[in-house]
Length: 160
Image 1 (cartoon, one colour):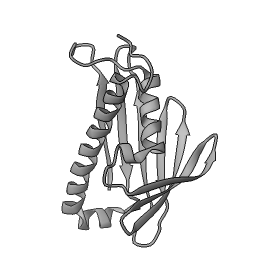
Image 2 (cartoon, one colour; image 1 turned 180 degrees about the vertical axis):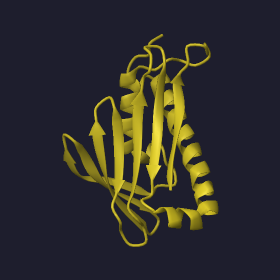
Image 3 (cartoon, helix red, strand yellow; image 1 turned 135 degrees about the vertical axis):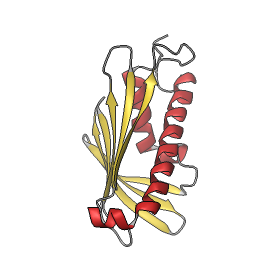
Image 4 (cartoon, one colour; image 1 turned 90 degrees about the vertical axis):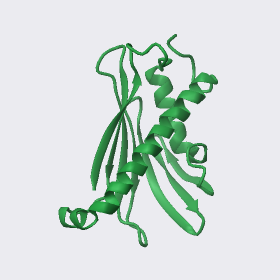
C-alpha cells in the first residue's frame, strides 16, 4: 500500500489557526520521533539505542510486540521512519515532509509505503482502507499535539 496525504498547518485565510514557524513544526516532528509516547499513548516503551547526526535507531514496545526502526532526519525538511522486515512485520517507510509553497502557507505531507506489491495491495484492499483511515487520524492527532506543544511554548515562539 502506498498512501499519502497533506495536512495544512498555516492557512492565511483562517484567523482562528495560530501560525507555526517551520522551526516549530520541525521541532514537533523530531519530538514525535524522539518521544513517541507523547503522541502514541498505546506505546509501552521507547528506547533510542544508537544515534548519529543523521538520525537514530529505536526499539518500540507495544505489549509483547517489539518493533525496531531507524529514523532519518533531514533538518527542516523531512523525518523518515524506516522499518526493516522483522518477524511478522514487513519492511515499510513513513516520510513526513515539510512543504512551504508560499511564505504564509505551511503543510506536512505524510507518505506511507508498506513495501507490498500491486497483487498484495489488491488482496488487502479492504484492510488497507482501514489502515489509511487510521494513519490519517493518527497524523491529524500528531499535528494537533504539535499545535498544543507550540501553544505551551515548548517548541519555540509563534509567528503571531
